[in-house]
Image 1 (tube, rainbow, N blue to C red):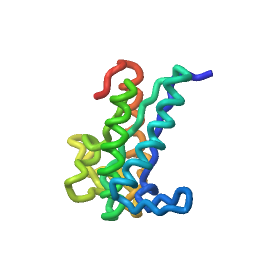
Image 2 (cartoon, rainbow, N blue to C red; image 1 turned 120 degrees about the horizontal axis):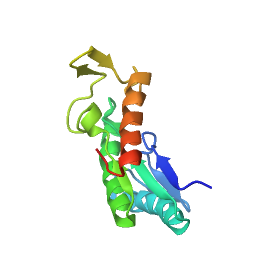
Image 3 (cartoon, one colour; image 1 turned 180 degrees about the vertical axis):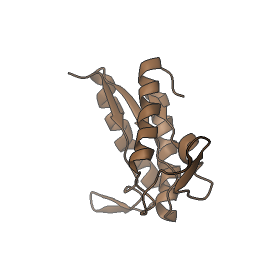
Image 4 (spheres, rainbow, N blue to C red; image 1 turned 90 degrees about the vertical axis):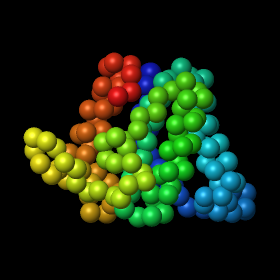
Length: 146
């Protein structure tokens, strides 16, 4: 039995949803409604089973469609987390706002330029993953989001 679920997904989601033979075009209002329902279903299941959720928001992406997806999805993730009383953990403070240009590297005052993203513009290097993990551990141990 576990009491906390950490969810970090979505970069591959900004594509049309086909359900019951009907296509919902990304990012139409119908697509948002269908995607929101999927997120809410996960959160409702967790709430019903007394499992806390920490939903990690998507970072900026190099590809425009996945970046646009992150904007739409993060809004849904954060709104639904708030509605269910769960935690939404943004990655924008670590890797840059979604309205800024994509950055593969970030400046560290002590170490200089750190590669935090891989060449595909979506995934993370081990350094980037450690940064997310540190933020996650802080949220879990303090009960607060940084």
